[in-house]
Length: 269
Image 1 (tube, rainbow, N blue to C red):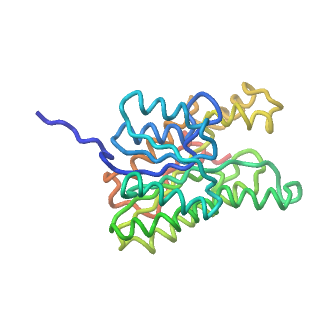
Image 2: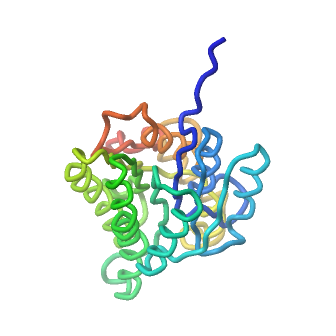
Image 3: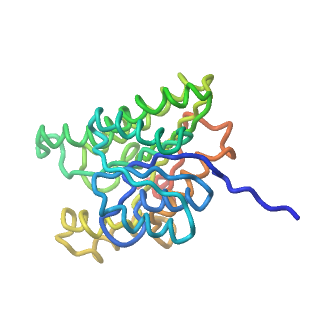
């Protein structure tokens, strides 16, 4: 009898931003759960231990392997420590998903210099630092796969002026391309997922307050109107895209992007 193999069986993955600001499918939670379902051992990183509690419980419910670690991934010392902790726990690092990020509203006049710096640190520097410390481990093994979570904001205006976020996510995309070419012969693949306007807990908890005065339903309707498909995706759609790019099914794919936006980027308006 043929028994299909789990796509990430016994692989060790670091997922940053593995927590969630509320109930529902945020990208980090969905990625952690989906990878664990496919046999990965998840080393989950977030600034808040409490934010990872539900993620942990969901994975433990089906017998998955989940290790939480609290760290600020804009801090190089904290990243060095988390890489050491992951190696101590699992002995290796096969996969990395750089998922940390978040927007701040405003163009160059409105956005403060401090907010600009914070946006670049959170959305772009975190990717640089995680790769800086994880990639030597992968290189020593001669294999590894990295998936960076960017945004369609990095390639198009998505309806709200968020210049720091958009610039940082565009940087993540180009970072992935350049580093993928550099490390292609060293057995390390790097690709990027570009989610569109998904319905994640961040929308309810944060974006509704900054974009629609706290009216979640109005914001969701406005976002849905921009999407050609008749429904809004969530973190599970990001997770499935990341799973494909991290798996051996994508063994000949590197230095590219997978857009997950229900057709929004394809629209002319």
